[in-house]
Image: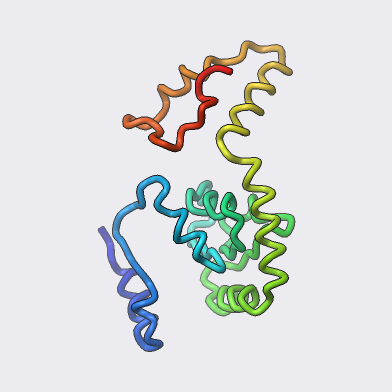
Length: 171
């Protein structure tokens, strides 16, 4: 694995004595492990450099947790942070990124508004609601409602673990 980005991050934190305030890992967190750090954060920042990034699990978690979000303008972020749900900055614009983060930290009212907007949006994108909407869409279109159990075959080899909603079985 490449650790160049970690070296850069550590070198940026050290002069300010902030290295102890950050934790780094070279592993993807297990399901559910992101909830506590998200709850403890004031602002969630996703400075992705790929404009074609079509999905971000941690961005989805941050929306669901109702966090104020600052992001670069990659595809997924631009879509879900529209309409007052986050602050978007240009790629590789560190000054704009810092200004957006500091602006949210200095303005609790704006941060609270983004948190409400994100929570309201994110709660409609969780799996049980998406499954129910998909089922209703099939019904409205006059098609046969798929058997949810068959969809589970597309799940990871280990299954969905404790994150699987009860509605995975056909309602």
